[in-house]
Image (tube, rainbow, N blue to C red; front, side, top):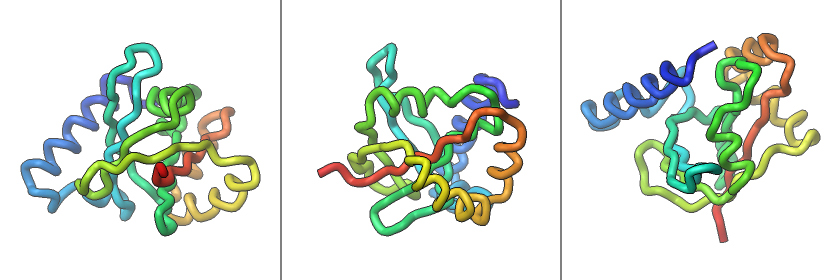
Amino acid sequence: MPTDFQLKTMNGVHRALLKVTGGRIGNQIFGMPSLELTTIGRKSGTPRPVMLTTPIIDGDTVVVVASRGGDPTHPAWFLNLRDNPEVEVSLAQGPRKPMLAHVATPEERAQLWPRVVSAYKGYGDYQTKTTREIPLVLLTPRT
């Protein structure tokens, strides 16, 4: 499982690649669009940006996967948005948009999970590495 240091390093490298290449490298990872999700730290109260991929975009709804590579613990960004669902999302280096996050219900997850794994089979592998159910998060525009 990746350490916090490794995850932060990967995020930094991802951002640098996007900047240096003008978005030619890094806007797609494993065939999925990348995005920057900004949550509010549940302890610090400060903005916490993280680079993620999205296996599903349905209209205005963007789905992200709280896999953390199959780690037994949830990623910090997931804990942050669970406590404060008001987030910002920048898709493909576009403008930041205010969005609302909600964890998929069991019914939504049952419908979405096959599509997630179809988009990137690694997510299915991650689920076999952990006993926790990997959450799916739906991001929708704030009104």
